[in-house]
Amino acid sequence: MKNGKLFSSLAVAFMLGTSCIAFAEDQTTAEEKSKADEQSTVKKPAAKSGTVMATHVASNADELAKKLANPIAAMISVPFQYNYAQTFNEDGYRNLLNIQPVVPISISKDWNLISRTILPIIQQKDVQPNNTQFGFGDTTQSFWSSPTQPTSSGLIWGVGPAALIPTGTDGIGASTFALGPTAIVLKQEGPWTYGMLFNQLWNIGGQADISSMFIQPFLAKGLGKGRTVSLNSESTYNWDTKKWSVPINVAYSKVTKWGKQMVSNQIGAGWYATGPSGGPEWQFRYMLVLLFPKG
Image (cartoon, rainbow, N blue to C red; front, top):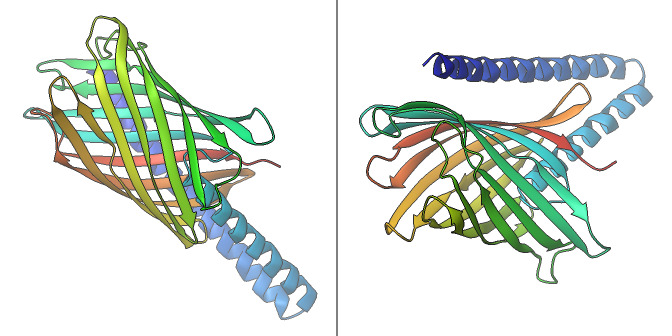
């Protein structure tokens, strides 16, 4: 229980801290703009330089936001995704922190290999009835082989394997290896990004029978100045129990700069349209993404 309270307190402090830093960054940007405006009344060349720099920063933020909307973009990113979900059973809840680095590897002039790891850290109460747990969940590892350039019709795609690795502790994981295919297809037109991610996992050894499908349709629109609004569903289907879990998620994100580090802050919420008995009804999400663009 102490671990649960500590986890919740750290999550709240983390969100408040990042919000304060983001606010400070906005204030700093406003002050710099004000100084540039003051200088423009004295030296036009300085004003022009400031305008060019501001335009470059905004353009760079929009470019990074567009890449973030593409799950298999050729850019290293390290998302820290915090989720709070309830109500499990009568009054259960879950605190979940997904650490999910994305690393593109160039394997030839025409092809990239995209690696994405999802390592969950979980604190939950009554998700398993009358049980409070804290520890690691099972790791999901995906690899997509993807062309470096879109097709002639503008499609971006990738295919490869996905694996469930039993890293769970404190009775949270399935203690089972699972393996299967994963694929993604999307298109980016102007400010819009839309597509779908898919995987299917079957157990290949361990204690549990797993036959689970994951489908994530997504839609995002860039608003300029590094801002994006998005809509998705992270749906799962259990072939054994014939049960769907379908959350509908909406989110708002903004790319900004913390010192020399480019980051994205995202806040969102989701409602479960359907799910198994005893599953969650809604969730809150905050995500911090560290960005490492090339160059």
